[in-house]
Amino acid sequence: MAESEQVTAVAAEHGRPVVIVDQLHVKYRIFAGGRRARGRASRSGLFTLGGRGVRTVHALKGVSFTAYANESIGVIGHNGSGKSTLMRAITGLTPPAAGAVYATTRPNLLGVGAALLPDLSGENNIVLGGLALGFSKGEVTGLRDEIVEFAELQDAIELPMRTYSSGMQARLKFAIATAKHHEILIVDEALSVGDRQFRERSEARIREIRADAGTIFLVSHSMKSIRDTCDRVLWIHRGKLRMDGPTEKVVQAYEKSRTAGR
Image (cartoon, rainbow, N blue to C red; front, top):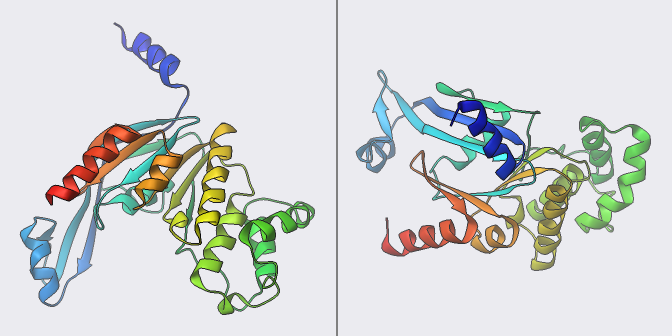
């Protein structure tokens, strides 16, 4: 089959490609002092010498995959496996050492670690966040009540952000970010906060974005959230793509490896 016919066949089966990751490598150079950097990490092959007091972390090693419109893709793996590095590379925040990332539009990264302005009220952060997303002042005003209700902050929205718990901040950030339609949205551990009811509403919001021709990447350690939200999973292991496939198949393999201690 000719290459053009193969591309047409893939598009017919999966839909429109929106992100292509092609043999992506990411490396960090870090200052490493003390026993920890020379110990277990170096024996695993993750760290290599890069000069006196400097070490190179090969965080991603030749990762390749294609994401399509209307997919909800879970990203799983142990701590330090390269999940968040991959997401930052997709958004353009982390440059590749080799390989490339192609996207039809700039992906938006939603993570609980992103900073809000602590001395401003939740109300003012809604305005600033909405303007940063491209809304007009009138559009932000129109969305205000929906955002506050979704974040469950009716009694605290006038208080400074520094008085909020980490969970309250994460709920507000999620509500602001998902008020806008995203063609490509990356959610990095944002569903690990809040009670069960909030997590269920957040997962429902992600499904709405996907249904509206959006593509979602969900990074999570919660296999329940992955199962409830995603139709495909990428398993990243020590910087490599270990498995890519249907959610249940990949999650079962991952859970089995954890039980076996691999």
